[in-house]
Length: 172
Ligand SMILES: CC(C)(COP(=O)(O)OP(=O)(O)OC[C@H]1O[C@@H](n2cnc3c(N)ncnc32)[C@H](O)[C@@H]1OP(=O)(O)O)[C@@H](O)C(=O)NCCC(=O)NCCS
Image 1 (cartoon, rainbow, N blue to C red):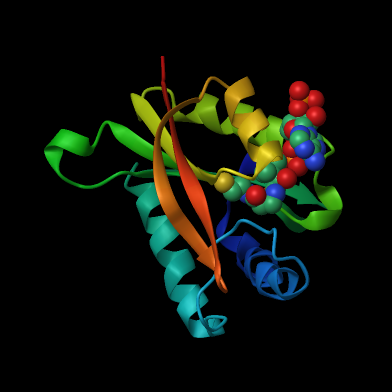
Image 2: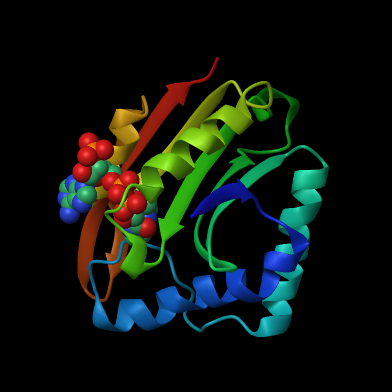
């Protein structure tokens, strides 16, 4: 397992990794990841990936992947909260691992590496996590994130509403 910055050549397996959540969510209603009404077409993914790489080149995004046998099996990113002068110091953290690699410490390694790579680029980080996502909350707390707010019924899947928790930490 290698944790490293994302590369252009990751596109095929990065998309495969992103698409896998659409299949998983049909089997697992407790997958607390966002999905669109329809799986985006490959062309849309190419545009999305291009904009991710552009943001990295512009110094606005940090993105690390976990690679196993040439395949992206996990990813973490921090993107600027916004482009206004007053919010450029803040980043939003997100991460996900493919099901078969969860619970093996990859999330832990990914977050450590990503936080290190954020030093000097961001001063504060935020993230949003569904309240019921115990594994993710435990990981974030371990890495210094603390709860600072709640969005009641911020997550809705089918007819089920769950609260979103806002967490933050300072960097450096
Ligand atoms: C959340 C996620 C990124 C965590 O990554 P991971 O590689 O599975 O996590 P790790 O193996 O590094 O474990 C993180 C911590 O959670 C603990 N943990 C593992 N399974 C757990 C479970 N079912 N419930 C509670 N804690 C659990 C681990 O013991 C570890 O704590 P420790 O270091 O004190 O032992 C990953 O499980 C995932 O992608 N889940 C689905 C998508 C998701 O929820 N993304 C986050 C959206 S905010």
